[in-house]
Amino acid sequence: MSENNTLVMEVFTDYVCPWCYLASGVIEKLEASNREVEVRWSPFPLHPDTPKEGLLLESFLGPNLDAVHERLYGLMDELGLEHCDRTMTYNSRLAQELGMWADDQVASNKAKAFHRALYRAYFAKDQNLANKQVLMDVVDATGLDVSSAEKVINERSYSDNVDGAWARARQLQISGVPSFIAGSYMATGFQPYEEILKFLEYVEIQQARG
Image (cartoon, rainbow, N blue to C red):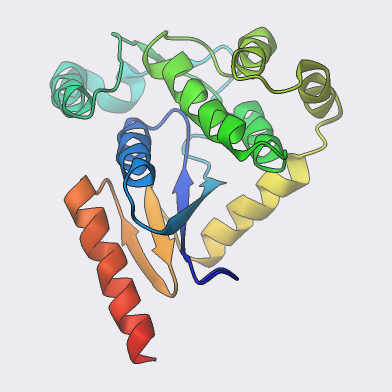
């Protein structure tokens, strides 16, 4: 619980993970409800060795790519999430560093908008999240300070923060995302809205029992 007794749920994600994009839609729905829960985003290295120019998705999914996309797009439609046809995946390290920087800014609503905009940049616009200009455009569009964000990228001033989050994921033995942590409990993999509610209710019951 946080200081005001609101349940805290930490969510480990990667901006290029389609299941994490789906989770972001569920979280957006959760935050729009009257449920008292504080969501904290933590980065996870899904494919940290992806080169800046990206890799073909086919190299990961092979001939199953179309079938996987068909399933994912159906789920995205159910959650009202924009999407486009993609053939590439990109390195999200710099985006993760900016995501942690955004969370440290005073305007929390802008940080939430920034996370969502990064997902949309990749899944709805097929943009390379390793491209500095793409990132700066997202910063600008969400009302965060572009010059400060550019300094974060140039100086890599949030690199240690992301390294720390990745180390925490290893410590928690997280091997896939999204992963949801509340109290001492974890749910791994995409969870529909109703399942997230059940998870949070279970955690609250267990914590109330002491």
